[in-house]
Length: 351
Image (tube, rainbow, N blue to C red; front, side, top):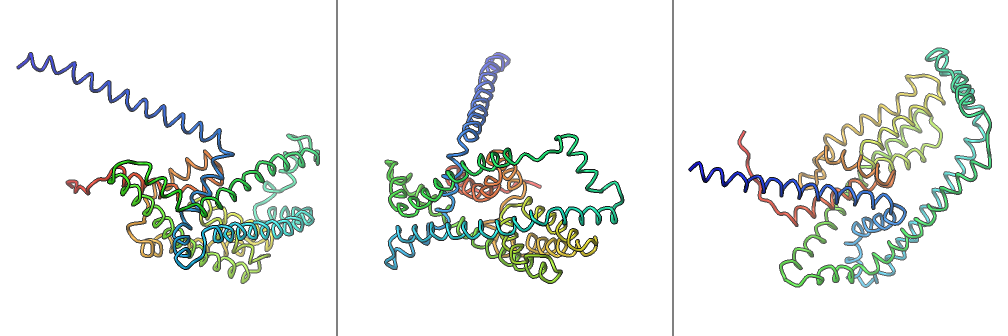
């Protein structure tokens, strides 16, 4: 008996070393993949964004095709609609930006006075301005600002073109792409599993995003009505911004709270008035997160909050703001994929 134990010890050590080596290789692969995805951000971000949106709109392609509408016509309509939305956002945003830039000195002076009256001289903007002037030289370099703007816009326009082109081809060639992904495998079982995987990803993404869009639309209406009621400028714009930012978990709502408070404080100069709009939205978000979403979305599409947070941190770190928007859809797609590739039966653990 002791001899068998001695002989078993090297075998167990060898197995442990193999497990450690396997996990080390997996860790190295994940690290290298993350580095590659970061380096290829300019190409991957528009392609992945187009792919996610194509999965969400995929069931519509099938439905409209049954009604006699070719997929290429639907794809062209989606791209045209995206262009119109982008154009409207640029025009409206530029108008408001020009107005705020023109009123910047007046707004800064008013904001400084209100900060002094509310918090004391320590929060005066003149002190902050003098601090920035000492650290940055106090000069405004228009050429540097223009150069920075062009450096930002040039890759952004290129990524936008890649996104729209990839979206068009993904929607118009959806059936051919699905057929290729299914028939790339030889055995029937794998083909069926791949087909079920694609269908489930499309279904879950469509269901989740449709419900989230409807909830965000209600929250946007609440923000717009609240902004109009309390007297904030551009209430319709506040609703549009809230609708867009609510798609980003955790970060989006916090950004809206801060923006509503700052603009409210700059407009009214009173802490109580400035807190009205953020508090109303906070109550609405709390009810949505704890009552509406669990009952409407259901148990099947409910995501673990910890995984949502980790996914948000990872994709934001990797791809910035666009990664934050893509975090939840990618988490849904990954969860569905893992459930099909590694099916597990539910196990009741002892208490």
